[in-house]
Image (tube, rainbow, N blue to C red; front, side):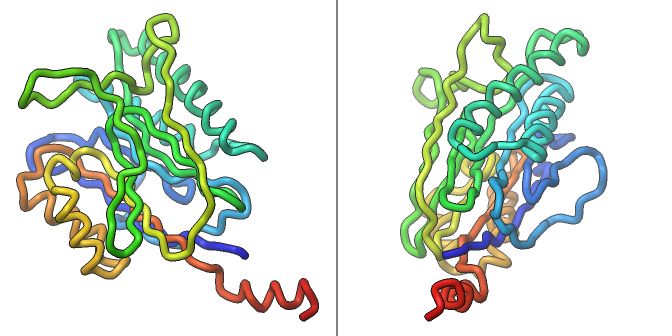
Length: 258
């Protein structure tokens, strides 16, 4: 059975920040200073492994934006190979080294980014995350977080800092991305987002919006809800829906000579 993946992607600076340190990768595109009309939508044909993901930059001034852009650019053109699980782990090492290599030339002490990414391969989906940008699966009624947050212990009522992110030199900490993989299931909806959404909108409200909105409008409705609730951070939302490719049954019948 062949599948295709419909996507809808949007990124917004929010109401309080002066710049957008979020980034994304979707259909080979990312925010690199050139204009992209958002929301961006279309369809992926995963005949070879293709990445979609969200990156939330960390660091003062524009350092977070540089880190998230480097990670997104690396994912956009990355060759994950015939084993995408190993390819994703290799990507994390390569992207981490790339970000670390920029610290000296920029004259800063550190910069980094989260990563929350799905790689759609011909026979499986591979999940990867580092940090607290989240990935959810929605089956039409239940919203389940399938990523794992990397957070340090913090005092009650204080948002915990990250325990891991891309941009940490291996001499300080060997990053351990959470990686999982599984089979496609037609109809499943995946939400990848920065904490600009999840800090502003509860998971109950996210599930309600996904259940009550069409795929084509859900990303914009989620963004509007985050802004209505305060919009304290950059907000990046990427929705992906797995669908059976049109004509897959006819192709199967021809192949099997039914």
